[in-house]
Amino acid sequence: MFENLGDRLQNALNKIKGYGKISEENIGEVTREIRLALLEADVNYKVVKEFINNVKEKALGEEVKNSLKPGEVFVKIVKDELVDLLGKEDEPLIVVKPMTIVMMAGLQGSGKTTTAGKLARLVRKKFALKPLLVACDVYRPAAIDQLKQLGKELNIEVYSEGKKDPIEISKNAVNYAKENGYNYVIIDTAGRLHIDEDLMQELQNINENVKPNEILLVVDSMTGQDAVNVITGFNEKLPLTGAILTKLDGDTKGGAALSIRHLTNIPIKFIGVSEKMDGLEAFYPERMANRILDMGDLMGMIEKAEGLMDDEEALKTAEKMQRGKFDLEDFLIQLNQIKKLGPLENILKMLPGAKKMGLNNVNIDPKQMAHVEAIILSMTPKERKNPDILKASRKRRIANGSGTSVEEVNRLLKQFEQMKQMMKKLGSGNFKMPF
Image 1 (cartoon, rainbow, N blue to C red):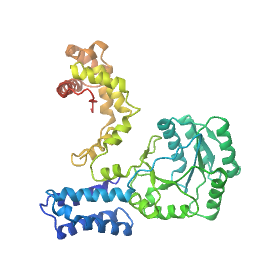
Image 2: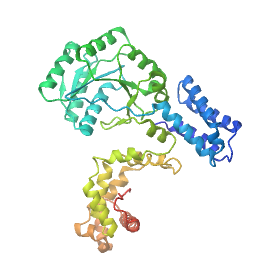
Image 3: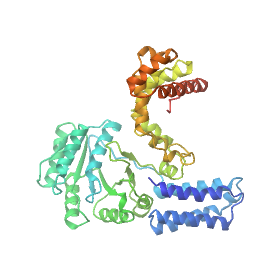
Image 4: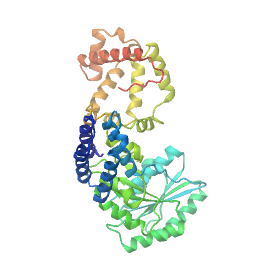
């Protein structure tokens, strides 16, 4: 996500960090590189022009001139302008009592139906709501079946009346939700290959009949600058409350995200970062700017861990670490908790300075993690609690049982001992193993 843009911006900003004094000349040189980076990322040229003018104006001000570290002040100016461009403040979901109605809109192929499922999963997990998915895409072949399959996978009910009138389906679904205790209704509407009058009229009719609290437009980020035209076209006919950008994990330049809010005033509420059902993230302008500039996203890491990591177990483990009593049984528990967070390389990318440390291109073979797990599982409970008793014959048995080698067993034991000593020295009651 934004990797090429991030690399280009960071290279430009690293130059200015090295200057002891900032002048109009070197500001001009750096902003030229920033301009090219933004244009190549498919950011709208009007947005780029305004962005560069704002950066230049602030960079030539007294605050930068009088600063002891003008390069750092310049980086802050660029970051603040990026945040401003992305929308300043995040726009949360609208949730009202006793029931919230959400209408999903978008062109065909934008990922609307899948996103409806992801959103249902998210509101159930984050807000403890009871969602109902409504199948109103009655034209696209297999659209209803797709939504039903997602509902089955997520254990979320899907309301469907087959190929009947979408307006009537949506009205009936809302009544059904009221009668059956659902408090978050997500209406998956039909898409088209392009914006047309029939599509808009149908969406307007659904809007007038069920009066949704939220109308979210799902936009494929791969469409680049055309995403702005799609949003503008929909917003002229519907009172959009937000946009969801999908496929940001793909080969996308990311310019759409940097142009949308500024040109349409429609907030980006979520981004799709993977095809999996947990691949929907809330959009935070400041966090996104930090990611682009390699300043990390520690809050994002914490939120990923919340609800997945067992706090009580983590506290017990931390206390054991502090006392130097941490064993391989505890290590296995921590390993299984970390696996819940998803691919480890995605977590590493969220660390500040990840690119400088080369962590953004790390590929961690899941087999390595599996080998570690297999080795520990091949030990007896006594061996896990007392690794010191592992002599040659035991190690051979463990290697055979785990399908690994004695060398791998020795390597794990050595790394574990080093980690244990390090944890004991840190002595932090809140420290969680980063393996």
